[in-house]
Image (cartoon, rainbow, N blue to C red; front, side):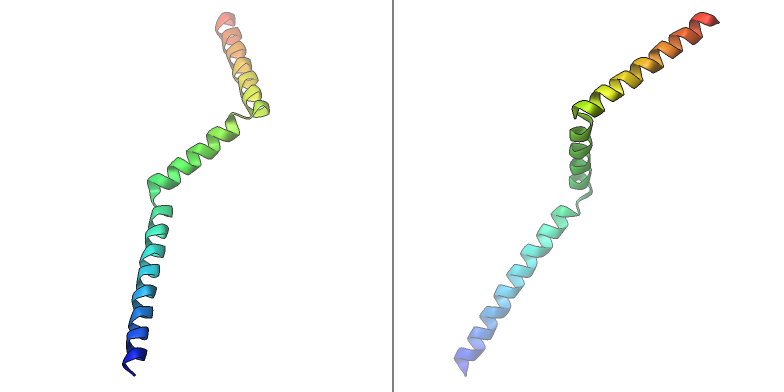
Length: 74
């Protein structure tokens, strides 16, 4: 009977440790700074893809040309 009690206590202690580890992992994942860094990394990776990068460069160039033309007309 004492062996059963010791075994149950060990299982409870192990379950507590596993739960604490899981909670720590969840807290790290839900950290706002961590989430912001992940989002920033994903956005930068998307923007650095050649089709997106060159499309944005082209759009920026077009905006500059249109702004210069508007300034020159007035």
